[in-house]
Image (cartoon, rainbow, N blue to C red; front, side):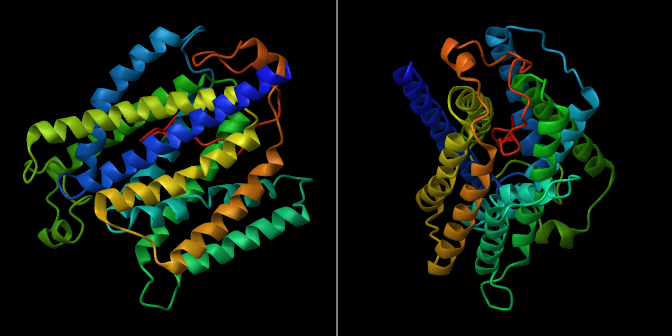
Length: 347
């Protein structure tokens, strides 16, 4: 039995590392495409591929009904994640990939602070220390008052707040929802927001100065130029596949391994984002950037330890949890620190 659980833990860790690899690649591809198309083109084109692909995936692997139990909260969660990823995409257009990733990974610390607002909940001394350490890491990363500071860094930090709110909704209002149903909700929300934005740009002419200053967001459907259409189509399809693959890998990781182990493996994303940032763009963080990223990672890792092992060993060993299955048989303690990546993996 112990050997089986160890194998499942190793498998869960392998799944989360796989998700980190492809998610970091997906973010790099978004940054690559930010010079060619608008963010609204990106989310619509990817959604047109991802929604049918995810639908086939759900049909193939789902074991129970595919309807949302709490549609309102699934919708609110989806819109929060869409807003988060729009902010992240905008940040990627002007900042290095590792910097955006580190700022976004302050989310566990924000979740810790939000949990302290719960009546009767008091932060432990270690949790307070983790929040302070993470705050120092953010200051080192931002370096306000120096030439290294960029106001765009506030975008992924704001995205981290939205992610934290979405995670709390997932834990408190959507515990019984199928992960695949929630993933589909986010993809449909992306598609809907993108289509609405394109409709607005079709009837509203943005000032030329805005389009030149922020072409990634201030344009609706510009003509494709500078990249072969076959290459562009390939990148869009790759992003859609990444969204589905990462969503599935993340869900499987949390089903197989203890949440703290998976959360720790999740931070490998910072390593892979640095790797892809170097391979695709030649970007490497400076020494202070590395220090800031390390402080944020250490603080986040400590914060995620508070979740404990909320998996039922019997369920894990018997393999009853599958990708499309709902979570009613899981233990009641919410996993606040589960990553809900969905746009590039938004699940």
